[in-house]
Length: 187
Image 1 (tube, helix red, strand yellow):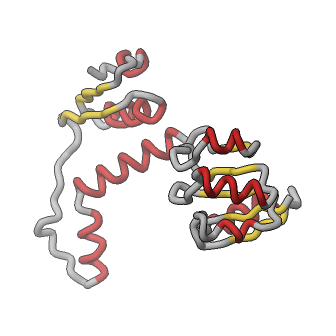
Image 2 (spheres, one colour):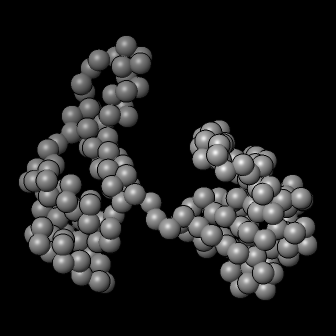
Image 3 (spheres, helix red, strand yellow):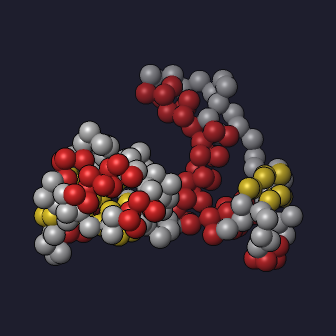
């Protein structure tokens, strides 16, 4: 199948070509976002692969259907940029990423907390400039601190687990109580 990939970055190309190595699809990559002015790039394709800033509204879907596109594949879990009703009307199937690794997202969240707390971003720049002064770079221990988490789904649960492992008191909010978080002592 010919797949036109919109909003392509170099890493998209690398990973999609690697995943396609044994599948045999023809992939055409475009840096342009999908919109009414760029959807002609999909002419001859049976599918388009899009990302979060691509426009997959009723007008775009009508144009894609007229070109013979039968499938819209998202490289994201969210699909708020897709008019699902228009896709149904045009008989275009929409597929998305079902979920991201909760550990990867939670660990990245903790990395950002640590980076900000320990001023790693500032320290990195200073070292590159040959400045090894510690002024303004000192952070604080997370142990003994109170951390707030909004949402205790799969990702929030892992964030709570890591923070409690650091010795933090964790306060969390979620309309649906997560019994695993309650067992960890999250309030």
